[in-house]
Length: 117
Image 1: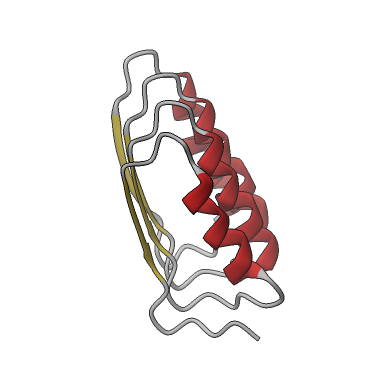
Image 2: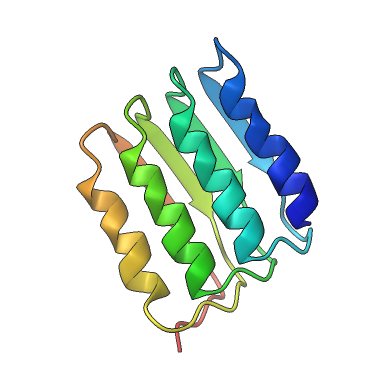
């Protein structure tokens, strides 16, 4: 859940971390946990990040939080698996902001079975 996501976000302090793949699908992660994971943008050498967060409880606030990953200066590859989350409002627009990242070379956003209401 959110506590686990917060604990894992501390990985941003790993001085040599270049690649991180986290599978947190089906773990009751809410928007609070997404905000914690977005702090990974501050990992100084992180080039490749995969966050599998499908089948959780992320809402529009979670989408907005994850969109902050666009500000990660070292991030070149980002994969977000966000299917089956109850996004609402303008969560889709928030995620579209990821295209503004100056450092991203590869972006994959999986929204299978997600309805934006």
